[in-house]
Length: 220
View 1 (cartoon, helix red, strand yellow):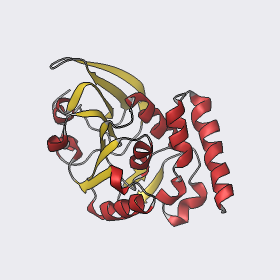
View 2 (cartoon, helix red, strand yellow):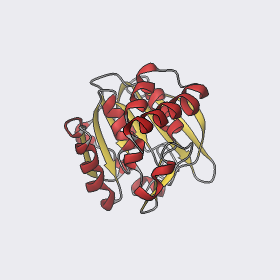
View 3 (cartoon, rainbow, N blue to C red):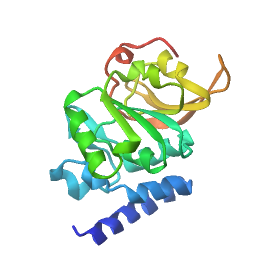
């Protein structure tokens, strides 16, 4: 595929799978147009990179459906310069989208074998100075870098991890799939020191979160 063909595929993905389904934030749409999703999927699946579904990336992990990435990013309401925590970085695709928005991104990935390739990929694409990616337990968050203006999780927890709520800045948003067989993608906003609001964005189907939150951290 030539660069021009790839750019057309990317533009078509954004128009038909994302904008036509209601994602309207122009900054999110522009970021999705700029990030080459095909470089974040296994080479054998690159012909499917701009299709409307998640794809396996090995080790039981997936790269999320483009629409879901865009919808979660829009729901997080990320401004340039915002400090953002990503849980379940995988191959680094959502990480790159957040970096395109000008965020200061701290990314955690449970699977050790995915971390180095994701770092290298992000560095090669010019995102290395905006991203700090490490192996870690997403349910514990990254307390030494908190508070965060937004936290996005690409793995489902049985309940809302208390640590993640506590690491939100006032006014910050946590976008997180919650549930087991039936999941809901929730948006939790920190209204005050001890007050939170919760809204459902859509039904969801994510891989389960591993680590402490996978054992149902009772913070809901």
